Image 1 (tube, rainbow, N blue to C red):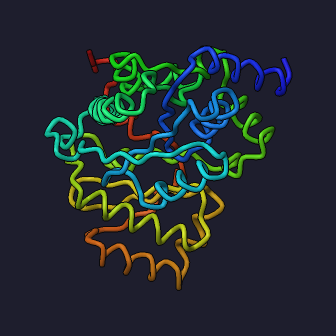
Image 2 (cartoon, helix red, strand yellow; image 1 turned 180 degrees about the vertical axis):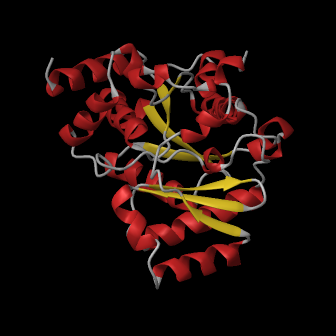
Length: 276
C-alpha cells in the first residue's frame, strides 16, 4: 500500500466516526490525525490541546500554529494533573494519571460541543513501549485511528510529508515530566526549571536533546553525539552551566552516551508496574 492509499484508508476510518475531538499535542502523530479528521469530517472535527505546567508553552503555540495550518477548529483545555498527588509522586504510572486528567477534561468539553468521540495519535509502534497513558485512553473509550489502520511511525512521517505538514520532521517531544527521574516529585517548579533549560538549548540551535532531572537538583543533559564536544567547549559550556545554575540546578552534567528517547525507563523494573 502506497502513501496515498494509506492516507485514504486513514481518512475513511475517521469518516466512519462521524464526529470527533482530536487530542492534539502539536507533534507529528496527532497533527496527521488532525489533518485526516479535518479532511474527513470538516466542521464535525475539533482539535483539543491541553495547557498545564507539564506542557512547554512553545508546544502550545506549536499546536495553535499546526491547527491553523490544517484549518481545523482548535480548543485549549486547562488540565490540573499537577494538583494530583499520584501524578506529583512520579511513579512509573505517572502518564496514566496525566492522560486520565486530559481525557476527563476533553470529555467535559466535547459534551458541550457535540463531539462525543475522542481520538488520539497513538500508532502501531507505541504498542511495544511502556505506555500507561494508553490504558487511560482505553478507560475513556478513546479511539486510535492510526493503530486501527495498522500505521507505524514511519507511515505517519510519510503521511505528514504527503500532506505537506510543517511538523513532518519534528523530533518527538513528550511532556516535561518525562524528564524527571521516577520517584522524584514532578512539581510545577521542577517542570519550569526543565522548560527554561531546554528553551536555552533550543536557542543554541539544538533539535534533539533532553534535560533530565535527577535527585539533588542535578541536570543530566543528553544531546546527539556530534553535539557533545561543542556543548562541552567554552564559551558555550560555561554559559550553559551558568544558566542552569541560575534556574536552580545544583549540578550540571553532560551524558556521554548521548540522546536516547525514553531512557529513564531503564532505571526501573517496568514489568512490575500494574495500572488499571
